[in-house]
Image (cartoon, rainbow, N blue to C red; front, side, top):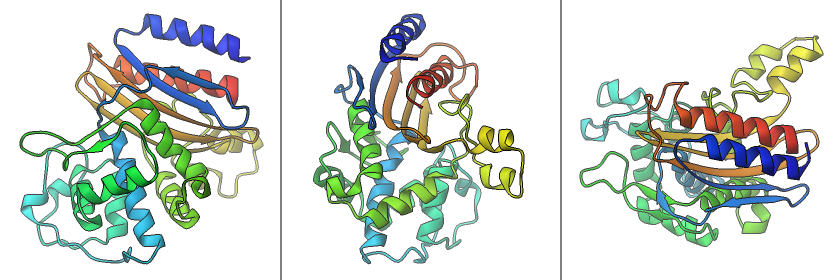
Length: 286
């Protein structure tokens, strides 16, 4: 599929979508870009947890934070939404590394807030975002806090964060920190949205261990995908770095005003749009 065909099919996909689309996609191999209202900042969901991960990984890579540092869970830390730490007994002492894994793999809101405290709070993450030149992005507060807040960003802001993972030297970001981020993000569990039609699985290592059938290997580990999704009522967001044998590309996606099904349901139009976008970009750029 050439870029003209991609553009045509993307326009059809957006026309059929019952919400609003904000997209920045960039083929780092060919230079091709897609920008649709990509500089419009609005509240994010869990895809914005990548900004916290970037801050955590840099502090670990530069020796300012020990990934084995233990953090005591308090009842006040436990917040609603995705994750499992909300059900744990206060007093548990997970490591900072485990907080990061839970934040990115099962999108744990409680561990997100705990890790945000560990790295120095919203101001510390904002400082990282500003230094990296990530546009349109404001770190307001922890997640699920009285009065709201959380994080605002744009599609291009999300995409820039993915670019940092691929080209850390270009942004004066430690390559070792980018590796920490990617190692954690490899294990995310959400493969029904952006990854639905992609040759990737969170269980790739287990699936292909000792496997000799090349078709099985290609289906489960045909590409590297470093991504984080987020969803709330009427909203879906994605950020991703996609690496195939022939190309590398990034994307930031924000879908708003989505009607219909529950946000975690595969029938939700936001899930479907994300999956179809993933397929289109892979067929054209992958």
